[in-house]
Amino acid sequence: MKILSAEQLSEADKISIEKQGITSEKLMERAATLVFNEIHKRLQGAPIPVKIFCGIGNNGGDGLVVARHLIQHGYHVTVYVVNYSDKRSDDFLSNYERLKEVTNDWPKLIKKENDFPDIDTGDFLIDAIFGIGLNRPIEGWVAKLVKHMNDSQAFTLSVDMPSGLFSDKVPGEKAAIIEADYTLSFQAPKLVFFLPETMDYVGDLQIIDIGLDREFLAGLSTKTYLINKDSVLPLYKQRKKNSHKGDYGHVLIAGGSYGKMGSVLLTATAALRTGSGLCSLYIPKCGYEIIQTGLPEAMVLTDPENDMVSDYPEDFDADVVCFGMGAGTDKKSVQALKKLLETSDSPVVIDADGLNILSANMELLGLLPENSVLTPHPGELKRLIGEWKDDFHKLEMVKAFSKKHKVVVVIKGAHTFTINREEIFINNSGNPGMATAGSGDVLSGVITSLIGQSYEPVVAAVLGVFLHGLSGDISSRELGYEGVMAGDIAANIGRAVKDLFSREMKDQEN
Ligand SMILES: NC(=O)C1=CN([C@@H]2O[C@H](COP(=O)(O)OP(=O)(O)OC[C@H]3O[C@@H](n4cnc5c(N)ncnc54)[C@H](OP(=O)(O)O)[C@@H]3O)[C@@H](O)[C@H]2O)[C@@H](O)CC1
Ligand SMILES: [K+]
Image 1 (cartoon, rainbow, N blue to C red):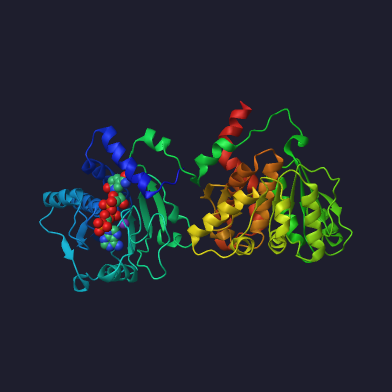
Image 2 (cartoon, protein in one colour):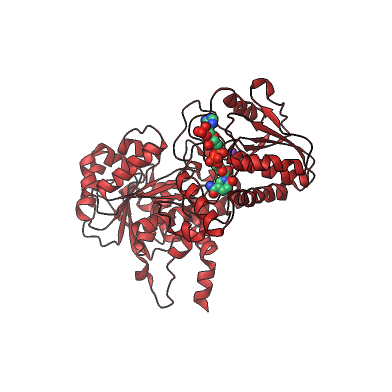
């Protein structure tokens, strides 16, 4: 799904009005009626106080339309106009007039702190103060109103955007922003809904298709995408009946050290669960029995060292190599990674200590085969590319890094971002239960396996991250967030594949 900028959405708004031969007021009516429908579906006529805070632009206009429909349906509604300016938009004004059709209660004007209404925890708040038209931070009494609303702890639904959030930049440190429990956003998700610094303001997110012109939307160019089920379905490569294990890749997982053999075990398990034909591990001697016992399906080669890897078997013929989990950063392990990179000419996957070794030995970056995949968490990323000012700056720095070194970077987080040169893919599967030891080792195994099965590295990363998240979702449904361990995520990858592609698998049987 495309992520669009505020400018692109405003443009789509204008073009749709022209092409569909409707007025902007009609489009507002359509969009806001869809918001009303969603609210009505959830509240089901509940007699709770609904307080709607409307700005004076089109976001406020949306709020007025929602108010009219709620009143018509018998809800207890109070409408407040947050009068931060006298420049009311045309569609705000016409919907202000139309409120007369359904009520004699005129909206209450808020112009200063004394006008703030009391808000009870049990009230239902609708935030229609600012949408994509916000062009500077909220200040003065309006900022105090935002705080007043947030402090109330009342359930808050934001229309289009939580007021105070910009669509294309991170707010200042003490910025006034509505902390929404639910955001109903129009037509396309906005990038800030997924960034670590701003995602908490959004609450649960729902995108509403307000019927903007499809042809125009399809033609809009963007390099930022939200990855959901529909985005990954076309990526799947079906298995042929007439195939054998050699068709699904031989992966080699190199790493592990004394006390950290579990990491490579998880990676290898995940690779096999993702469908690798063959899986070998290159590990220190101390791990031999651990792996042979823990994962009889895998083959094991040992390093001359007992406690860590120090070398790399250059003649080994793997389709793809993954290096780093549990490897440590000893000089000897640096040599192991160096030898791997000098030997390999096809993409490798580097994780964990492999990344820490790269950060401490930047000259090795030049040896990375083109389209290798690096999978840092934010701490590892910082060591690799340096400090960033904010999340937007981070994305620019990672794009530059990806271009310079011709690699794919997977930034792990609540929404994992896969960055390939200019392109950004934001993952939308997964849950907080996956914040657990070894979860990243499993992800590396999934991505490595997919590369071994001939998926392009960037496709392997995008699909792998989604599958990993979906497997976490399946695991947490059974075990609860707290109960999920990395081994469960690895064990459920097959179920995630089945869940996603069952139709494709069925078609294959017929
Ligand atoms: N796109 C679509 O397809 C559709 C969009 N629709 C809806 O329209 C919404 C966008 O509406 P919008 O453009 O009127 O802007 P909105 O957010 O209401 O702001 C109002 C005005 O506030 C002002 N202002 C800005 N910052 C300020 C500040 N800090 N403190 C004080 N004032 C400030 C600024 O004016 P300024 O003072 O800068 O001249 C700005 O113009 C969108 O989010 C969606 O809800 C749907 O109805 C239909 C389909
Ligand atoms: K809003």
